[in-house]
Amino acid sequence: MAWMYKHIPTTCFFLVVCCLTIKVVPILGEKAPHPQFQLEPKPNCQSSGPIIGSQRVSNPCSPNANLTKTPSAGKLPVNKNQARVRSINKKQNRHHYRYTLSDNEYDPNADYGLFTVKISLGSPQQYYSLIVDTGSRWTWVRCRFCRVGCSSDDPPYDPSKSLCEYTLTIPFRASYDDKSFANGIWGCDNLTIDDFGSIMNFQFGCGLENFDGNGDNFVNAAGILGLGKGEWSLTSQSGASMQVFSYFVPENGGGADLQFGDKAREKSNTCTNQFTPMVQGIDQEKYYIDLVGISVDGNELNVPTTEFMSRGTIIDSGTTITRLPEVVYSAFRDAVRQSMSSYTLLDEIDELMDTCYSLEGLIEPIAFPEIKFHFGQENTIDVILTKEGTIWRKYGTVNCLAFAAAKSYSIIGIVQQRGFNVLYDLEGETIGFGTNCT
Image (cartoon, rainbow, N blue to C red):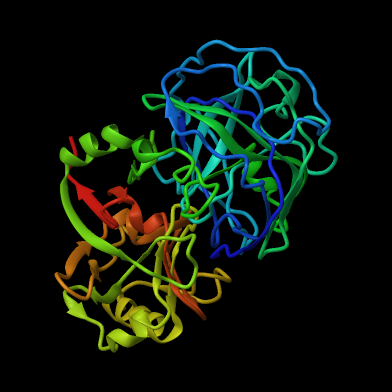
C-alpha cells in the first residue's frame, strides 16, 4: 500500500552507527506501511554531513533535557550476509512477511520481497535489521524500555550504549495508513555505513510503542530505514556523497545489493542502462516517474496516456506488487488473461490478486506473456519485465499475476523490479534500470 504522511515539527534526539547486510524479505499483499503523521526534530539539530570513520560527538540538542552519559565507541566492523526465503501461504492483504533460511534450505519456488539492511548501533556494537524503504523518509528502531510491540529478530536497541555523550527523551511518532504506528523518542548521533563513512548527528526515532495493524510485527525487523525524499531522510542528512544510491533486486532469492555514492555509480557503469527522469508528484517524499503505457506480448494497451498519468506513478522498494489505476488494470488484466486462455484461471484464490493460475498437471513451466513498461513522455524507454517480475508464487501449485488495481496513483512495486539494478540519481533527477550487470 502507498504510505502517506503528514508531519508536525517538534524536536530531536540521537544515536547511531551502522554497517550493511542485505537480506531479501518475503511479503504478501501490498507493502510495509508509510507514516501519515510524524513529530520532527528541532531545526537546530542539523546533520553535519559525511565524515570518514566514527567518533564521539556532543548532542546538538537542548543541553537541559534528561541527560544520560554514554560510552564512546570504535570503528564498526562490516558484516554482509545473504538471505534465502521460502514461499508464503498466510493471511491475505498483509503488507509483508519475512522468513530467513540458510543457503542449504533455499527453495527455488520461493517468493520474496522487501530488503532489509543489517546495521550496528552504539558501542559495543548492537546489530539490527531495518526494512529499506524508498517510500518513506523516517528511520526508526525498536528500543530498550519498549512497552508495546517490542519483539523482533534482534534485541531492542539500548540507548545507554550509544556513541553520543548524552541521550534525550523528546517525542517521536509515526502513524500509518493501515493503523500501524511507532511511538517513542527522537535521537541524533553518528551513522556509519560500509564503504561510505559516517553521517554526524543523524536523526532517527527510538520506538517504545510499536504496533503493526496487519498483525505481522513489521516482519520481525527492528525498524525501518527511510530512503525517501525530504528533510530528515537518510539521503537529506548525508550531504552530496549519498545523492546517488542503487539496489539490485535478484530474480530468484539470494543476496541483494545496496550501494551508495561512487559505489552505486560504479555498479551502474557495469550494466546496460535505460534512464527516465523523475517528475514532481503529489507526495514530495516519494519518487515519481512517468508511466505512459504498457504492452502485453508486443501489443500496447488501448488506454489513453492520461489514464496512466492522471495521478502519477511512484517507484518504491517498500511496495510489493505493482498497483495500476482501475481503468488501466482492467485492460491490462484482460490482455494477460487472453494471452493465457489455455491455462486454468482460478476464482477468488486471492483477495488482492485476481488473476491466478493452477500449475497442477502442467509438464512445462507456466508461460506468462512478455510485459513491457513504457516510461517517459519524451525519449520514451521500453523496460521489459523479467519473468519473475511478472508473477507472484502464491504457493507451490498456484502462480498469480503480481499486479492489482488501485483507486489512486500507480506504484511500481519491488516484484516488478526483480532482475534490475535500480539507480536513484537525486542530483540528476533520474531513475535508471540496469540489466546484464557484471
